Length: 456
Ligand code: IK2
Image (cartoon, rainbow, N blue to C red; front, side):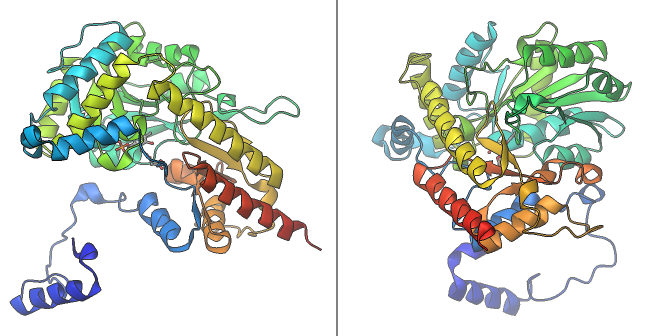
């Protein structure tokens, strides 16, 4: 709040707090015991805080954090406007049901029931959350105890690690390992694979859960049926849960199919599916997410939810419900947003691939999501390596790039645990959910850079 009021008023408010004598802004707290709870140890750093700030300060083209810079679909904006300004709908400004606005949980139950081929009860098999982020937090808080191990597939969406640790659990990492592409071909996200024996070796008596993210952020990998079966068999064998982060479920390309692990034998009862309206309808600022799963699991998510957030914004939930209603009516048809968005994004992906190839970065073609990881080895002379530096090379490169070229991206090492950050440190991630003009501006920067590089 203080940041938004402007410098003059902020100064005034701070002054007043001081004179009232209760400010922690102006005087140092004198407490002899530590104020920080144990669960915060080692989880205080956050990549987004740092890189979002860098992008805001230096970038002219921001392909860093994952959000579209194009508007959401008209039908969704209209639904939101109606929700906040509709004369008869003034109750949408008030609390709604804690575990999800009834129209939203009903339509989600209908849609996921159809996708999973099972009857879902909107009240017990669906819960709405503050974005997928809160859904993840609820899962770790609800299922993970001290001593429990959680398998995380690297590279991974960074918050899994601190969330597991905050719950008292121990993350156990398994990498996706790249295999060389065919001669003369660019690498695909499909070339990054799990080693079945290595994966099996990570499961133990202590394994409580595995986190699956398909399509995967940052690589864009869409796990194949065979890969999902491998994971599913191990979950069943070891009686482990699967926290299945599927926020990019509609963003798959080249005719690929997103397969829901919960639909595989033995998996419904042990899987929580996590989704995000932010990614589904290009409204990341609305922070509406959901969980879908069996009541035996969701009942515990409800306990965390009712004792933390309790309730999510009613109007945004109502608008998302209307969006899904519209999509169910247009399901599979050419004018469905779930058909149109991936088609448009695939073109944007190809546009960015061309720009990167032209300057000598080697993109890994993503099968899904709106992210693309590129190898920057060819650019190593631009930012010389500092051996034994604490900071991985890709992180220093991304910082240098935004400061010197105005182009923001995210280092791949951000998606690895502390001990593995240097394993793949010559890659950076770009977000291509951007207006064509933004991608053209990125292309201009890259072209100019190439000319400077080759100039005598
Ligand atoms: N799960 C995954 C895999 C995500 O990518 C996200 C959103 N992350 O996007 C930021 C980025 O990587 O640049 C979430 C969960 C969280 O989704 P929500 O915004 O609905 O909370």
